[in-house]
Image (tube, rainbow, N blue to C red):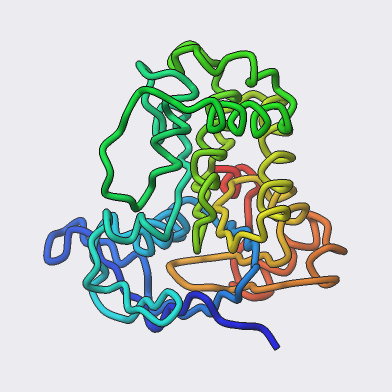
Length: 267
């Protein structure tokens, strides 16, 4: 029996309401996320993928509907309050880390997420060794850079650090918003591999927005395709794993009645 961890009920979100540029992005979207799900979201530009993640995180309020995490309604909770349980990794490698602080200091801040204590730059030997092991396990030589300022890391190293910071204290929910879109192909594959390992090892319920159809097929146990603010495809297990990109495009065409231009899907 799957335990539901996140419930979205009839979510609506409109930007610039009442103006000529009014944009009804989420149109009555409903979704049940089960504990341990790793869902990849795909869809054309403007389909509502990132808006969905921002709605869950509390970046902006929804117009109507209900968002429930565990037993708690998130609707009235601030973004800061939600961040105690919801961790995020952004597309921009510059976000989610403090560039003028060292790798160790960044990890120390992440370790105190949700706590009220002040931050001390002095790290105990025990904590330092824990960080060293954590970084050594990902295999990018980051364990040798604990005392290096984060601003001097490569984009890929920085995204791995952001991922480790997001998961060092196991969150209830992890949101990955096109977190490899700004990386070169080699760094992309490294970060995706580490992402999958972290999510599996820690059994973290995760939602990943991607512009890469192959990644949506290859990663996670569930694939959701969005169009015009609604879910048009929701596949899991064997049905998902056996898919090819061509079959996914055909399926989208059948469900939505639209042609998918592959470059549109890559936006």
